Amino acid sequence: AGELGGMGRIGRVHASQIARLLCNSDAGVRSLAAKALGHMGTGGAAHAGEVARLLGDSDLGVRESAADALVRMKAVSVTHVATLLGDSDASVRRIAAEILGSMGSVGEARAGEVARLLGDGDAGVRESADMGAAGEAHAGEVARLLGDSDAGVRES
Image (tube, rainbow, N blue to C red; front, side, top):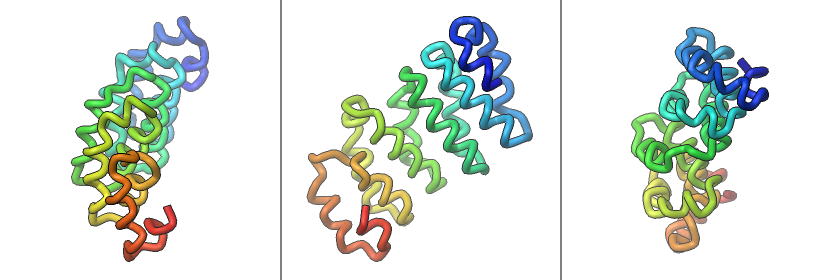
């Protein structure tokens, strides 16, 4: 799967076959499939919704591969990612905030939604929201995190 991702147009012909591997029982296979689709860039973007579902995977490596793939696709739906900010799983909220933060001006349009995570009950989520994803418009809210009970959040 990984090799096909780097093959450009030729590899894209097999994007649907690779996308089927996103449901494989082996976390390594799911991770590689997400990476391959991400390396296809816009050619893999037709499967962005399927890759986005992996942000809730039980395996951290799969979640990270999915997040990276969505950014590489450049056609990642900001709306898709923004809906994940309200997910019941803290790791999904954390990754969604990180993705929006890495999207530059496109992600900044959702700064208000990310800023709401600054009050999240999970320290990792607060830290991710604080790491620039919340935007300058929410500097006051970010400044309040200097008094957070979690050292990682204060340092971010």
